[in-house]
Picture: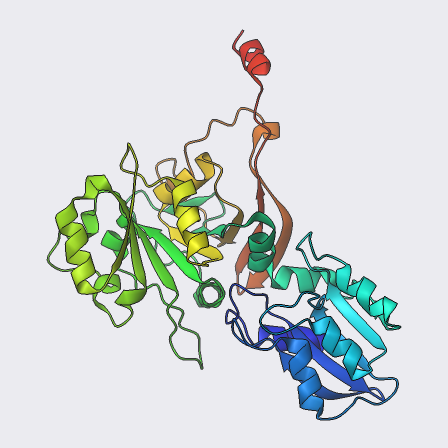
Length: 377
């Protein structure tokens, strides 16, 4: 199963909105064929492994796969049918299909056909591999994730705004790996104007890759200056989408579109695009996840409005000990630990001296009207 996970990791970020899946066939304790799911519309890992074998597997062969085989007839046909037709009599599975309409159905079909099915092998690792897909298929909206780099005392910049670099090279390289996983990246206008980032994934030994780049700019401040940012002028500008409102001005919208930049104009009484409208448009475009990298105002807004689903926080062994240093998140009034926002299903990784903690965001229960009146006295 660990080898199957390696195969799935080898197609990191290439299968959206479908999951990354690795599969292999073992005969006489030896791997004889392997497969990993191709981009959207292509064959699934199980079919590719069977095709790579080139003949009917020997009696006693076992198929290992990181995710429950599909049991519905989509564009590529049900993998359960292909497995049964191959004559394989033993299948070992990592994670169960998160789709409640399909979960466990493949196991039933395979067992009815006389196939031995073993489940939950390295289940946590196999499930974590597809955290974007798992959210997409169950919630029917994109996974809204954010990344922050902070000091041990939770500050993202000095009082002067100096923040480069809080974390070391290894941690920053890991950020690019996550950029390559997510189909889209999001930043606020302030980040564009201050840092002028490229917002591409640059990984050693691999070609630069550009996700969809969302710029949240309700007033189109990023278009005023003659020196336009990279994301509006580089070779990937057609993959940039500016999310704005009618407060931005039609002239600037026209200017961006003439440059080849996409613009989503959202109806809003304020200068902020409403998150439900943004998520609806993402779903229509089949964008299954967005990785927000800043700034603090945008990410705080996500938390305040309970829109952030997942959080990556890199901590460096640095202490600023300055109450005027910039916090990474603000805007909540947390009066007790019971009312704190928490992370669950957490994972920890070390990158040199820096630590990454990532996990699913859990918000405190909202108070009822009666509880609110009681607390107010």
